[in-house]
Length: 265
Image: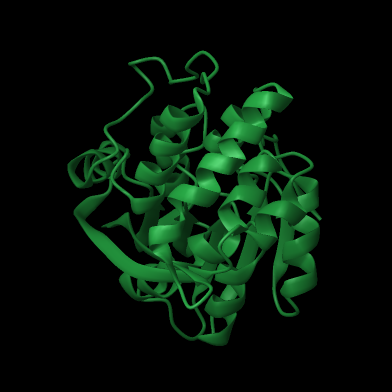
């Protein structure tokens, strides 16, 4: 078992809920991420923030030799169960227990938007990458997704008050835009950085996003769980009403997008 410092703030004890609700949404970027990083047979690949292990599983299916790490033990159990061929370990940014240049490809799917110091995290991704290797990462754009607008409307309709902002200090944060993500990777010393928007349609049961948030998943989960029972009930009622325009034949049809960037060490 690989071990390193753990940074799993906001994710401990919610792995099962994440796997059932938000993980399938986050999986929409997996194939574009693997394509951008040019993952192929025989490559040494590191998956940082492996979550349920789906990214690692698909990298293995392309013939890569995969190491997957996550800072949350419960998440790592899910990844271990999913990944029959590869190495797994308890570790996270910004301290990975690997030598400089240990991997030809380093991947971070929706990780840099959750760490306490994204700049240090990006530098660590680059450090673990061999010269000529590729780093590929995704993040959510700030407030631009259909789900972001849905949650904003739920908060307004229910009168929910978000807890005090947990925004990063200005010297650690970065703009959650294509340019901001590209600048983050370039600032880590990567060259030939390219960033783009990835769009897809996520399909699930109508109340999946609510159940994930109610379990405490992500930033919206922190908002939901901070409310009293009456406000949570009002939020649920607002969600059930506001999600209806996105439901087709009993299925939630959610157009969404993320930002993807790749750079060369």
